[in-house]
Image (tube, rainbow, N blue to C red):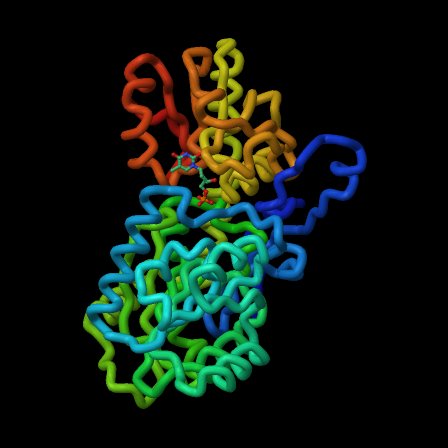
Length: 397
Ligand code: TMP
């Protein structure tokens, strides 16, 4: 049974930055109700009513995975490890974005799957790219075209985005070789609960996985989880290693340890989520009070990083340009646009981060180390960062 535990109110698509604030543009802005539920039978946490993916993954998709140094080196390092560990002949990535992972492999052996045409256009110059959604039809087409099955399927921050999980798993099983491995990375539910990072809930994160939920779900698809890595990307994620039931891989002690930890933290109990929901309500109130206090001292506050996560925070906490003068972001195609729902201007860091800024809300809190290092000089000169993770606070210098 699915039970709702968190209501984050009316939200726009996290990725739908507005090109202008004309009546025509603002009137056509799409909103949906962001309610999060827990399935008491398989422990899966998901959005109650997901948005149609055709609205989300369009040719205007803004996120570029290679935008941050942290992500570039994380993908390079995992590509190297997986190559060494599994020695795959054929590799496929689902949600290949701008190719930041696949570029580390021999282009002849890889397949990219990416429904956003603007991104698929980037990778198609180098690799075989299917500009399509991952589904049963595409899995059949790939086997037919290529004959041999795939030894390594990688997918970072994508499987949790696809509403039809059943079809996704059936299709994965379809193309996987007998001893092939599926490696999935997605935000960790345990990290979200520990960090109170409710902003990991937005339209694209239809599911937030845990090891116990994945174990439960795979049972119906002739697949099993045999290992898990705890990783730091996106504020705490899990990397799941999945194979066919009869494949050669043994379940690792690391997996057992992590499953035990999730159970110890009661991820299989509905009450845990009710407690989390109460902490989220407190976080909203505290963040508002903190920023209001700063504003009352006549200080200038901006937001650092026009992240998808900050769309959830701004819209849930009702923060607009009365609080933040603007948002800075390094991504060229976000600059000159406005934040979804709250319509705060987005400008480049070169223009926006200067001595007139007193405080910066760390929208990109998952890149905290990288950003604090980069802004060391400005912090010395007086710039102060504010974060809501794990609770609203000023980051001490
Ligand atoms: P993400 O958390 O959804 O990947 O988005 C991170 C955003 O933050 C992305 O648009 C790039 C931006 N960003 C900056 O503006 N400055 C930085 O130093 C970093 C690391 C990211």
